[in-house]
Image 1: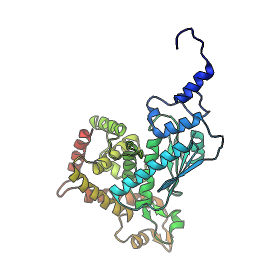
Image 2 (image 1 turned 180 degrees about the vertical axis):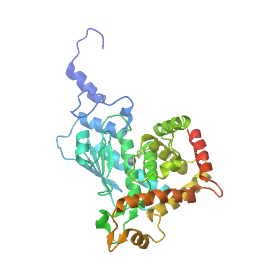
Image 3 (image 1 turned 45 degrees about the vertical axis):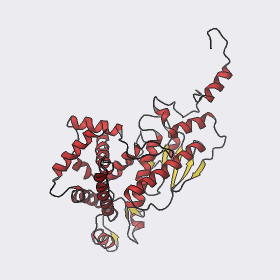
Length: 352
Ligand SMILES: [Zn+2]
């Protein structure tokens, strides 16, 4: 358009909408920051918000492993369901197990809606996604904010759900009410968060999911901390109790451990490590007991009741056994933990 020519504001707005760059955003939806527009879930939600559905009811899309309720329109619901299913299939293929039941996933259009719906304490200020182990539900805020985009957040929470539904300890009969749930967290923190961080980085194929890519955000932090000798040793992270403070460096270490166990470049090494990881997860599912039901009762039940301080004792047990079992499962014959850590460090620096 040449200078001096009159512009028709309605025409410009129409063009802007057609080009997907509408500046008219409903209240509560932040404008995307540079780079965020590439997030497919966010792009679907933003295009929906340019043409909002007058109904406030969520749109629903059923996948094989999930039911997605979307307050961000149908395309976002479809994309989320495809990506969720593709991630579950990939994890089943890699790690085995059979995640039974469908997961309820809700996509929220604003942070306020997300916080209200996912509002069990404590919701951290920068939280964008939640998996709730008691209900099995996932909530994701599909908003353009700092940090990983909503697709990465959904993949992160889906990994927690997969591990919980497949490998967390099924509570022996008669005790589900006492522990308020059918499963107790028995997959250690490093593995829950490490796998979730691996899934954040999945690339997009036709289904919106491609496993095995390096999570450059976590990798960058890990290299930096290792180079500056500010990094906790892997054994410290592996031995962290469930629910303990887990800072971004801990996430980076956990990511680095799981990534090197799952996605080594040499197919023979990769296959062997995955085999060991499956064996480790089998131990997690049994909460590292030899006889799960009997040993659970012997250690944690007195006069038909769970022992006092059960939660604390449980977390301590998982943390202790996590590291012991790690050494038994992943160290080669004659290898010490120091040698394994050094080898891991070298592999992290070679990742691209
Ligand atoms: Zn997490």
